[in-house]
Length: 131
Image (cartoon, rainbow, N blue to C red; front, side, top):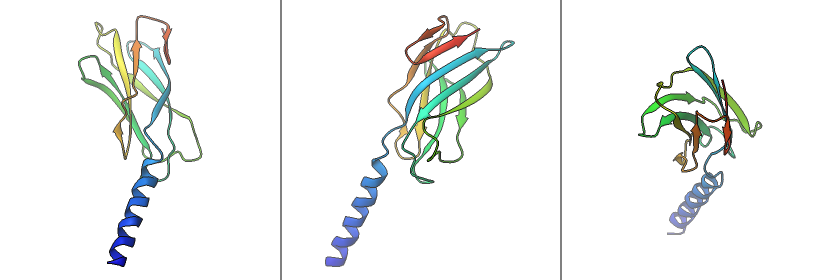
């Protein structure tokens, strides 16, 4: 009985430790237009704790929920916070003027905090657009 209580307590402590990092947050987004395609730079912040809990990607999603592009992050950035990663060759349909940037971590999944980017403007809340 005592052993079971100790094991349960250790499991709860481990779960709590994993949750301490919280969800990934998007600090800044930059869209740069090339010859037809876009390069997207996304700055993320997350209390990466190692291989079991880190920010592992972000994506560009249209307003209907269709994923237009995805950037996978293959390792934790424990000592590099916040950090920026780019994705080039992103094709946004011509009639699409607004997209969301969403971020993901291994424990919490897709963060509720996402950035709405209005591609018809040069800047807005946490985003810039360069043509």
